[in-house]
Length: 433
Image 1 (tube, rainbow, N blue to C red):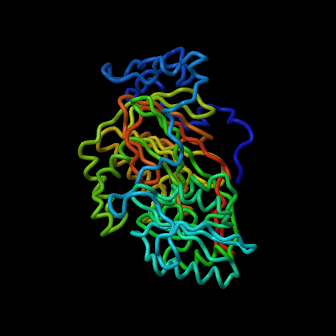
Image 2: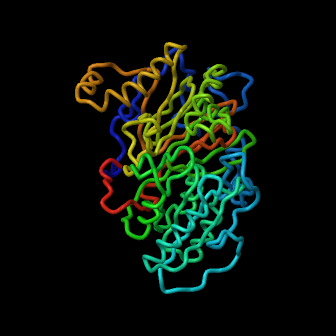
């Protein structure tokens, strides 16, 4: 499946918008605004005491604009995804786990690198597997890098790439996979996802084996590669600072980010992804809708009152939940879910759409017929395009692949088609990508 070669001809079809702009839940869009850049200050319907979405700083004079920007942070500045484990920089280790800083000896043979989170894996067993399977494939001795809570592994991944490795394996939580993928984007070097940690969201969406690390380690040397998409989020904070981060599964603003922030880390280590149910219960009790203005890449400007907006590269969650069933990781398109329930009955509509409709009925022919006869669910709206830009005020919490990344007043999400080269086992079915 490939991305459309031209913009969708119909704006409402492109955005999936079947709700009038003057619906009661929506603030008003300025009559003369064609994009978010046309919005100066707060449009009617936003809180009067909120900070402006845009201000004079967005329109510097040409001389100022030409100066180097010391506010925007580099992509390698990735926030930690956990609260335990070692601090400090990620480190290179020997096959025995001892810290080393040795440069790899030049070799005509291929070489692999493993970047792993030591608190998420059986590190000694994993290093032994990689060493043994590398030797069996007649590859050179592999390189090993351990991450920390302060350094998820993007810097050491770049270090491995400078050493000229032919493949990189990543083993850790979803945050580690995200950080390593960010460093690998656009390189064309093969990346192996070794399932570990809590969610394994990318591995689940790719249908990779989850029970044991060895099949995926072996696939590094015997499998095939497949290009998949990667998402990028350009974030603006309330203080005007900007950051750029990658995501491989989905990003979000609003309630989903608050849910992740409210998840008990000890409970997460004990029961895994089920701990997010606890975080959801904590967040729903105090959840309040907030107003946003957003625009799809080829759509018009919209305003809405929402609980959350999700930006998906792929749409499957644990327990067989198909959050965004139409999302594909190879189509070059971003799938967006606007969650805007009205009261508790609205939340029942969200549950019905996400769990019952998307995750159950869609699996059966009779169920799909039921869905065809049913009208749209106004509690959840699904949109699709190559990018989206969204602004809100005051700032709202954001998350990328399950990592809380603070708050933002503006976010632009895009998809880089084929930006990652993923390893899959030989004969692996990629038709559902």
